[in-house]
Length: 235
Image: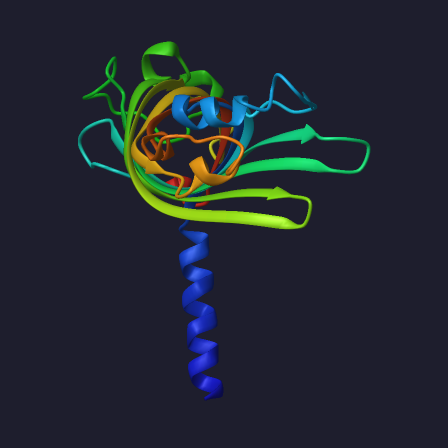
């Protein structure tokens, strides 16, 4: 058992030394018209101290690439959250929350250097340029969405699995042979997201169509990725 543990430890250490991974964070906006309409029914009567349209996303990823072309794959696990809080009075609040746990297969196309031979994904300051660093990203994926409504001790929750597609642009800035900083902007489209029973939260005072529980969602992301590569001697 000890030998097996030692072997697994050494194997993990070897993989870590050959890892090419990154972390990212950024600001997101969300457009979900049907959900926003249901939630906005409170706006004429109560004040809000947060906007449902704003959120933060964090992600971790792993990097690999094609051998002869500047096409790079960056599968990413990400988390983002959006919320709106209504002050019903000095004590009571209405809380609406949407959380996204996503797995996206980000694919970067370096369109100005598709057949170039550079030290990728990170390159030294001497080799850095717009031509080598600029890319277009296509990002198919799937998200698990956690929705919740909490008010005065009562709660309503709904989860859904939703396919998505994203497209964006970015540019790599190689700080060293090990470290890359990449500003990015992306648009993600989510298809057929459903917040089950959202239309019932105001019953019996208001009757709202069940069709408003479903909508397509658009998210805009602007952020920064930091890439770390521990095997730069391979390229």
